[in-house]
Length: 109
Image (cartoon, rainbow, N blue to C red; front, side, top):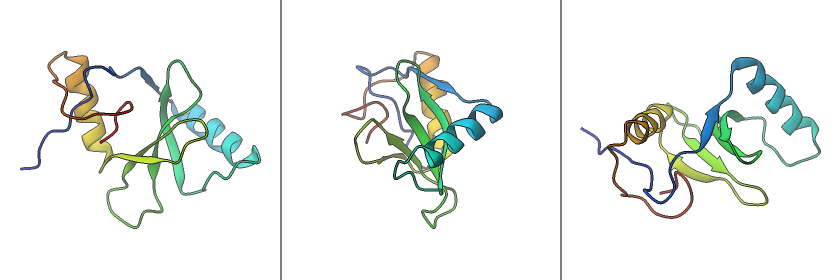
């Protein structure tokens, strides 16, 4: 059984899930915006207070795709090995039963 990953206590999750149309729109904007956004990076959630967030790295060559976090002007960071781990940590944080086992930025290892 793999260890349960949890959100840092000092950084509660403040993200919103994108619905399908938003995923498509954000993805198109990122690709067309003149940025260095990689087509393999598919956004699925973003910070509620900023226009950056979490994406699946479908080009990582692993199954399932890892969850990465990208902040403005920063390199993407691996935050969870799979979407299932992200969702388990989010559910635990929302149920208010998590303790801090990770440090750094929101969702970081």
